[in-house]
Amino acid sequence: MPDFRLQVFQAVARHLSFTKAARDLYISQPAVTKHVRELESAYQQRLFERRGNRISLTAAGALLLAHADDIAARHEQLAEQLRGLRGEAAGRLRLGASTTLAQYELPALLPGFQARYPQIELTLLNANSEQIAGALLAGQLDLGFVEGRAKSRDLHYEPLLADELVAVRRATTAGPPPAPLPLAEALAHPLVLRERGSGTLEVLEFALREQKIRLADLRVAFYFDNTEAIKTYLEAAPEALGFVSRRALTRELAAGRLELVPIAGLHLPRQFEALWLQGQPLSRPAELFWRYARQQYG
Image (cartoon, rainbow, N blue to C red; front, side, top):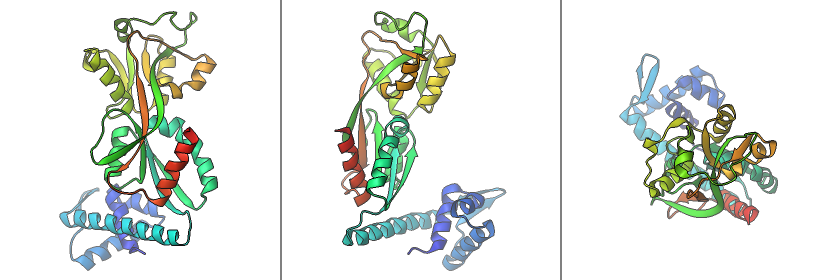
């Protein structure tokens, strides 16, 4: 069992706040301070630089954090291997998924997986594709799910599910255009897009680049960090045009609040993928979830 003081130190280092660390660990702030001071006394090093209400890691603190993270990972690996010897499917599984997957796909898989493997403790991080890749590389996730074109040579990618981006606007009395709009006409509208680092924006940028069109030359009304915000904005902005996953539009299209806008010469297929660290085997819980996801999607 890792020293609890190290867990306290990790929480303070993660939040750079004694108050938030205490809240996370369900202990008092004086107890957090006590544990950190004990570590500083044991190592005879200051671990945090205090400047007014702000704190930052010292060089010694950054070094200890790296080793504390390694100790925690090794402890989890040991616990998992011991459970494996008993034939148990148990342990911690830290999933991460880009916004479309986290909001519209993975939640439907989780109840069935939990029913099958009740001893596996699940968490799900919702972030954009770039952030999910970064969290995997930092050892903060066991298994990720993203979309987009960019790849890291340090991560292994496996296809999971096909998707398509579509143009969408507030529903009109006339209904969707009877014929695809010319690309120039469609892009003349105020555009509502996902933020930098998202796989959705990346797919759109690649497609526009093939048409010799730069995103910087277009009239972007707003960048949002989630699809729900884009859809809500579009319902209130009759002139705007957004690009989102077809999988995110089921309810709005059925209710007649939004409508699709076909665009001539612009096709935006993409692939949802699973990813994990290159050259490293999946943990037992991560392997089980990856198999389960593939079964569900056929």
